[in-house]
Amino acid sequence: MLDELRHEHRMIRRVLRVLNSAADRWQQQPVDPEGLIRLIRLLQDYANQFHQRVEEEVLFPELEKEGIPQQGGPLEVLLAEHREGMGYLKELEDYLQRLRQGEAAIQAELADTVRAYSLLLLAHIGKEDMVILPLAAHARLGKGLSELSEEIRRNLRDAAKEAEFDWVLRELEEELGLPEAENLDQDDGAFPVEADALADEFLREQ
Ligand SMILES: [Fe+2]
Ligand SMILES: [Fe+2]
Image (cartoon, rainbow, N blue to C red; front, side, top):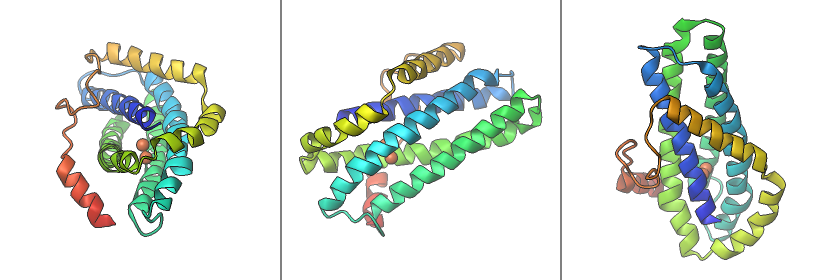
């Protein structure tokens, strides 16, 4: 299950790469917002309803049992970031709708929101990948978590939607001329994440 979460983080990083690339180009050439709206809606399901629910309903409660406080500690910060991210996605969808309706001036706000959302999510994923998931692996939660998460994943998983998510993502990557996103698990330079700084900040929050 920990590997699945890492894989989902990688998918989310691919979406952020697409959104940032589109935002960079808005100034020079118009990008059709249709595909991006579709991507945002799919991400709302994938990141918020699926990925985050597994974290909130399975991973975080198990870590709490290991002595990491849910309230007043790092897990509370991660939960708050989930809510904040959902707010940004709603905002992004709204801006894209207005762009589609011809409100070109909205591009600047849209680009700002893409950047704010990316910063939030990259730091969030960084904390999970570099601190939370290794902690869970260290506590040997992996196996128990797999059993626990099996049912929730069975209920939430929607193969057709996941295939659509992958397909829409690929289409947009192609349209934007982005290279294959094979190494997004590692820092490939596109998203510099200071691992040590993040871990320090995270531990200070505890
Ligand atoms: Fe998360
Ligand atoms: Fe996550």
